[in-house]
Image 1 (cartoon, rainbow, N blue to C red):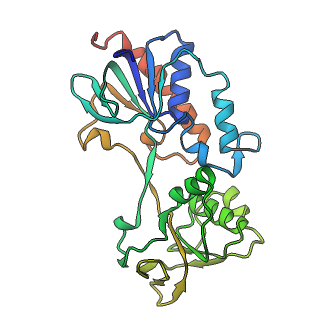
Image 2: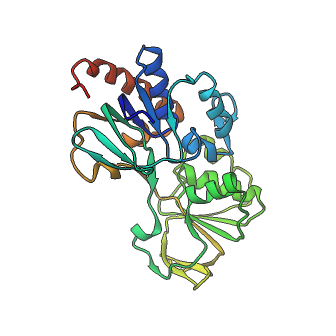
Image 3: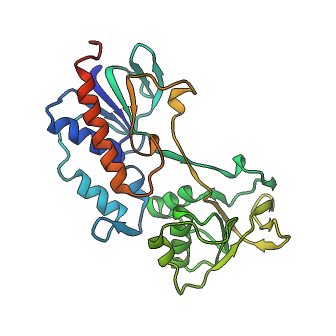
Amino acid sequence: MKEQYDVLIIGGGAAGISAAKTLWLSGCRSIAIIEHKPSLGGILLQCAHTGFGAGLDGRDYAETLLMDFPKDIPCFCSTTVIRLFPDRSALLSNGHIIRFRLLILATGCREIPFGSLPVTGTRPSGAFTAGQMQEMINCHHYLPEGPAVILGSGDIGLIMAWQLLELGLKVTVVEKESHMTGLPVNRARLTGRDICFLPGTTILEIKGMPSLSGVTLSDGRFIPCRLLLSAVGLLPQRELLEGRKIPDWILPAGNCSHIHSRIESVIKEGASTAVKVLSLLDRAPSI
């Protein structure tokens, strides 16, 4: 493993891929990507629904992004960055330390779990975030048991409602707003489907131990379920910054910068961040 690069990219999803391709096409050859999963593609690899590009699902779309990916860019997959240091170096999970001049942080976003919500009760098996269940089903072929309750009707909530219906599960979506909040394309997938939508309420208590038995809503209703998914929002994943101000040698990109509703804007921001990096390289300290 080479120990130093002009540009280190943390995150091999759409933003990281786009940034790396842009840098390479612009003549920058000292680049590396660190990706914690076994292959590049990021969250696209767990998306079985269509709507990416010309009717592609997420996995097919990832393949199109990688078709012209430069083979000479080092990609260290199944590798995690443990810590970033002020001297512009990164400690990796394999024990190596990589130095760099500039860093593109393309670590994506994380879901808000039940533990962060004002929900009382037990913490039984059967409660997940929507993204966790999406990965379990589409990447690890896990078949959940229903009935299912999904808290939140944003895009990931509606996508998982559709997928659970496709698996034959009974699905209830609980939403504090008076309407479904996801994009029209994701609302349209549920048109005419046998789904129970409960607007204007939320979950107050989780029941069951060791296995989930149901939830109590803020309007007093009890909904029995074997599977509970939280889909209440996303936050940029910036734990590596340890809460400190972003230094000028770190440039966030994609959902790590701010939450995007469409993959096309993630790719666009990855490319624009790479262009900004190129303009900064001449002034960046040498390694």
